[in-house]
Image 1 (cartoon, one colour):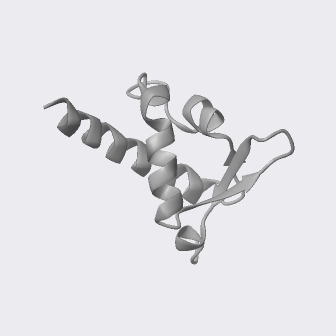
Image 2 (tube, one colour; image 1 turned 90 degrees about the vertical axis):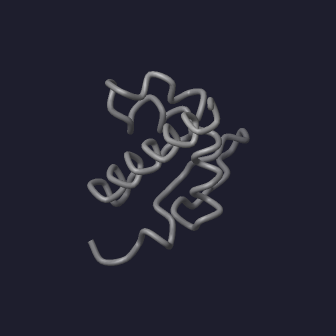
Length: 86
């Protein structure tokens, strides 16, 4: 039962991240930054718990492009799958 709720939460987060990238084509941030800044404050209070899984799935789908930064953090940018016409 919990996993169905988690899957639904992750799908909503993914959709919110895609909407953000559609509005802000050059946006880029870490997973923590995505959870803190890209998602609306209301309705995503549990974002920190799910953001890593959502980001990993989006990278695998080509929706986010990871770039390793000095110091080891990863910056996520709009991936090739979302880079079509605006």
